[in-house]
Amino acid sequence: MKLDYNEILRYLGYEGELDNATKEMIDKGLEVVEKYASFKHIYRIYDLELRKNEIEFNNLVIPSRVLPNYFVNCKQILILGATLGLELDKQIKKLEITDMSLALVVNAVATEYMEKNLEKLCHDIEEDNKYYTSRFSIGYHDVSITHQPDLIKMIDATKLIGINVLESYLMVPSKSVSAMIGISDQPIEKQRAKCANCLPNGKCSFNCIREV
Image 1 (cartoon, rainbow, N blue to C red):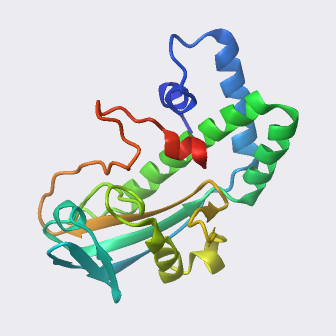
Image 2 (cartoon, rainbow, N blue to C red):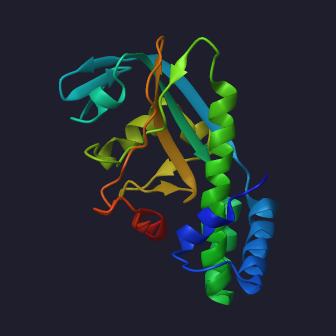
């Protein structure tokens, strides 16, 4: 799988040209990720109802000013869960003791590795006669992170792919993702969801990634 080195550098907060030493470190991090990551996913599709300042699917109501517009003209919603597994978490924790620099690189590489897997997955599951929004994750914009357990339970992600949600609403394994994708019968404009950490200039602070 071909990863974007520029994205990895952004996750690291690295500025400047990619030098040989940094590239070697990233390649080493990729070896760790490819060895220990195990991409697993589960998704289910539900009928979607849009109302003013909230959406509802599978008896779950999510208050939001943004979501009814984000999923406009969508009649269904795809709920997705994905993870890179616990073994990768264990390796990162070991590296945090023995080689913190490599641990940071592995964490960044794993984020890009997850993104590329999700891009391929979403492409594979899209039907030719349907139109899909970009992914929207719980915790973005005005969507409360407290709905995280609801989505994970709804798709049975704990039993099927091993994702658990802590009391803090973070997911374990740490490299896990949940997302909502709208499905429409007519063309829609894809847009990216922004999180509360987005900076006024439009650039991502990546605080969410670093905190996880």
